[in-house]
Length: 100
Image (tube, rainbow, N blue to C red; front, side):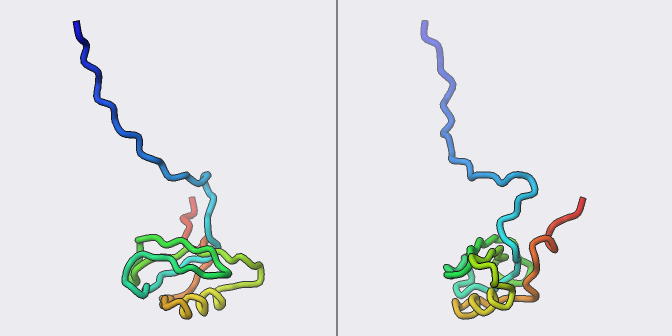
């Protein structure tokens, strides 16, 4: 007697999850990207992630400085030099967080 085996589902890689409450960046802003896509520029002094959620621009960026003395104005300048246009204020991430 032959028994049918259930089909094997492919195992897809799962992206790492962040612990509850952990935030990647310290600053968040919307931008218009040079190509209209959801891209993050390679900036020497910043770590940047792009998200496809934006109300006015092409992407929302979450950024954190690699040096302690960098702030929102430095990020705006670096983005402009990379061809990205910041929209609105550059806000601390906690301004985007929902309070419980």
